[in-house]
Length: 327
Image 1 (cartoon, rainbow, N blue to C red):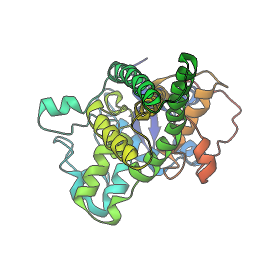
Image 2 (cartoon, rainbow, N blue to C red):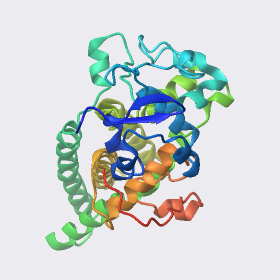
Image 3 (cartoon, one colour):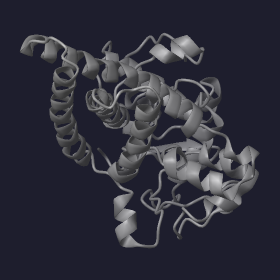
Image 4 (cartoon, rainbow, N blue to C red):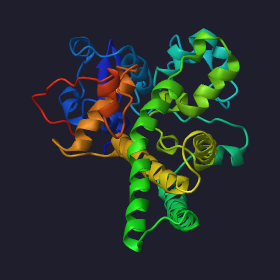
């Protein structure tokens, strides 16, 4: 990819070369505007306020297209980007939501400690490396528990029926995941902590999900780190087994849930960084998720599936295009 792709907006030059592969409307729709003025086009295509904020990050010097001018505008002056962000966001109060929904293309550091900072960044290979072995272990434990339960209760079974029931419990967990995905994304990740003006809730929200909306192009922050994910999994598992899931089949259900979670996490990464073919399921979901990030923040909470968006009335209706989007 060329390191120079200049456009002009209101008399100011912007080098958007590194943004091309992330443009929600595809990189191919911008190519016609290279070295041209996009001021009228942005108005014509109804670009969101976040698009204008993001554009500020690509402003460059008139003399040197590689010299970026970090324009702070009315929002980014609220924080100090040269310092760790985790302990700053709580002071934003009622302006937190406005700030976090204005995406930037910058490096975001959360903590002073290099060790803790490293734990907050998740390379894509780490997710299956952690969760696949755990899933296999849960399947092994679950099979043993179900077998022991059937023998203890003198329930007649064959190896085939035992295997069938174990598969069923696993599938139940797998089918449960899309609802959990929607529930967590909508009612936990998209809480509005600024209404309470609570620094603690704002900081918690930012750590869980807000930072992903703030820096959506950072590949190290697209996937949920295994340590906090494991803590949330354990809490959810403990709650479920204490309320409604028997402990003898819970490991198999959890294995299904984790499989769904792993699939979701990898799909999410691909929706940001992949280039799906036109007409494919992931092509449609990439367009859908881009709309959630850059235009319809209160809709489109499904990432691996739109099913629960249909059920709860939060579906984003994508308009038909007369061209193929390419990334």
